[in-house]
Length: 511
Image (cartoon, rainbow, N blue to C red; front, side, top):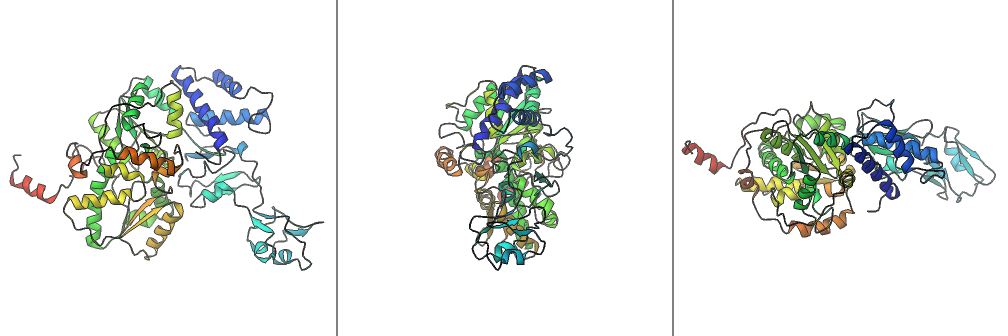
């Protein structure tokens, strides 16, 4: 996969892998961590930065991230996405820059348009003083030669909510009060400055402690590792790593769709608009930037990740649940233990999962295990439109007429923000909003293994092998009365079955 930090990914994953190896061997102490730093950056020449000392400092901070800590020991933020300060020193401080196209006009329109005295005339062209510039853009508008360009840093450009600013030294600063922890800034930076905390070491400790640890694999997984790696292949690999078993989160998608469809039906009768509740970054956007819509319009049903976690915890009290997927924001959802109890204990991105496998020399291999627990609708939750399609399918399975339902399938931060803004000001014409912060849905998540196009090609081959089970019929095989599907509690509120089944049950209570 081609990303802005392609050459850094190998180093990032190597650090995760080697740190995990130390944890497996109970050798994650200060002396061995220091040896690891020297092993990865032996010197005397630097491999990645201006000098070997900066290389080593950044490796040290990435080891802290691998341990689930903030890279800077003095940083007390609980935000999942942090900035490696020493890595964020190569971007230009000036947002507006004068190019060689400048003709040093006699009229000096750029200087005349600047109200802050930031522009002076040099020997060959004008110059913008970054310390005085307020980034109003008037000079660029005034230049007849388009010689003044606006340089938007890649991290800031990727952020859909304007959470990134810079300090007086030009170092990236993430505003925790605005950040939705989507992780889109991470792979946009060519210097690897933004990064996320990892919980790989905690998971290793849980496994080594002898606890029942279950892997929960995202619907986006099929297609990420090629056309021959099935859910059964991943299941086989995680068992080799010490997990008790695996459950595909597509099953949780079936659960979420079934309950969310009930809410949609009620909202439709009341003329009330609703949004989905599956994408963690979308929920964070609602919660932080659209609090009234979060309160009044968002579904109260838990995400598929949480649904499977609650199911497993109900069936296996005391077990540990680990979500594996392409999403960074899921880490923030997992950490919200007060807001959404009984959710996943830990989250691994695909990159972390790959490093995790390598730390014990385990490979994903084709296998004959036909494992499937989700319907095809649950499996397709990972793509834009998949959630809405599954919800409408459940409405149809209950015998409801779905003609006339209108939807906004918002995929990407800008589209989500636009849809929620329209909803906020009462301008949204559609009935429901399906929100996914990543372009194309979860398959386009920040930790995807390949480009979305490549993933979709292999994904379709794998999905064609799935059976055609119905969503509600599939859920009859699971104890939905043992746990809650609602965010604010863990005691189940009776699942509404199709009306004909309810009537039949009422007529024959002994059954």
